[in-house]
Image 1 (cartoon, rainbow, N blue to C red):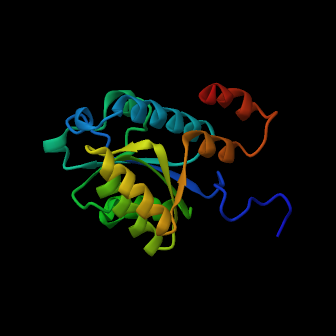
Image 2 (tube, one colour):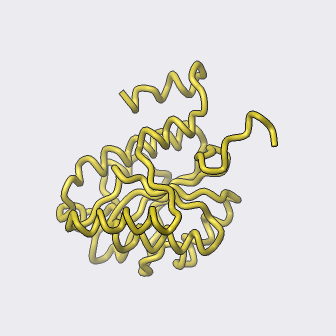
Length: 188
């Protein structure tokens, strides 16, 4: 193994994909701290876009829950949003296909609800051989106790529980690069 290779438990920008999970118009108002979830998710989308990390956004039953909120939707490629009706996003054929096509094996998860779709997608992905990383400060649930229980269960189950800053700095890998200069503003 090269000394330049990241440790197995670190995020690698060449192996990562960002999955924005169900941050939708009619669900978001019920999530405590939703403004922070949206803002941090936006930072991660910006970083992923700058670093050529694939981004997908699942939408749970958009006819009922609306689409991905506008501040995030405007940062996404036109084909990045994918409709689903399964709680584990990877069980939705189109989401699973998109992630497999990237050839990447690390899934960084943000979104709602932490104890339902985020948790089931993380564990479902791990069952398919992905390393799952849940961004604790960019996930939410309608009840704070459900969010906390989900994060505890994810940790105990082997998912990486990380922060927005951890993800960005691990994706950057080093200072002094053009990407670092472009993205350091996201963590200030």
